[in-house]
Length: 193
Image (cartoon, rainbow, N blue to C red; front, side, top):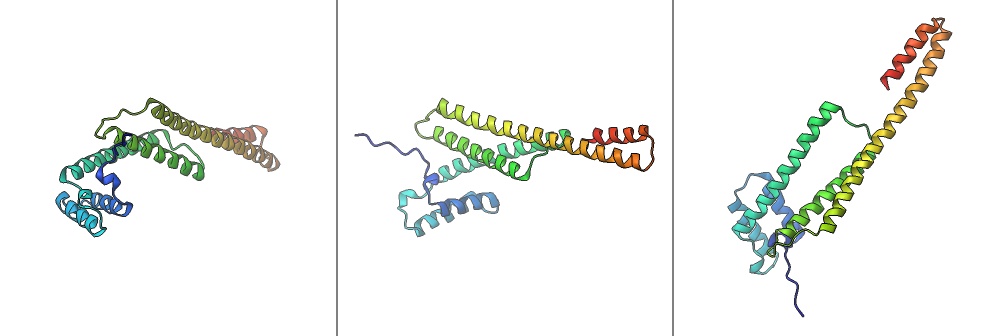
C-alpha cells in the first residue's frame, strides 16, 4: 500500500494561530523577512513542534511572493471595479445581496488560490478541469445574480416613479394647474426612474 504524499507546504501545515501571526507580520511590512523567519521558527519551537516543521528562508520567500501576487491581483481587480463603477454608476442592489455576492466571490477566490497552491506542489499537479469548470460556473451564477438584483431594483424604482407620477398629476390637477403642466411634471418624474 503506497502512502499518499502531502503536497501542502510547511507553512500551509502550520497551526492556524502561527499561520495567522505570520500573515499579520507579512502584511505589517514592519519586519524584515529574516526577522519574521526567526520569530515564526521561535513560535514553532515554543508550540512544541518538531524541528523539521520549522520553515526555511526559501519557503518563507516563496510563500511571501505567492501572497504578494494574490494581493496585487485583488488590488488590481478592486481598482478595475472602481474605475468601471465610477464610469457606469454603481449597480443598485440590496445590502444583503451585496454581502452574499461578495461572500461567494471571496470563497471562489480562496478556492482558486487553494487550487493554484495544489498545482504548485512538488508533483506539479495540474488543476482538475472539472473543478475549474465548477468554479467558473459558480462565478457565472454570482454575476447572473448580481445582474438579476440590478434588474429587479430598476423595476421597483420604475414602479415607484409611476406611482409618484400618478399622485403628483392628481395633486397638480387639484391645485388648478393645466393638464399640459400636469403631464409635463409626470413625464419629468418618470424620466428620473
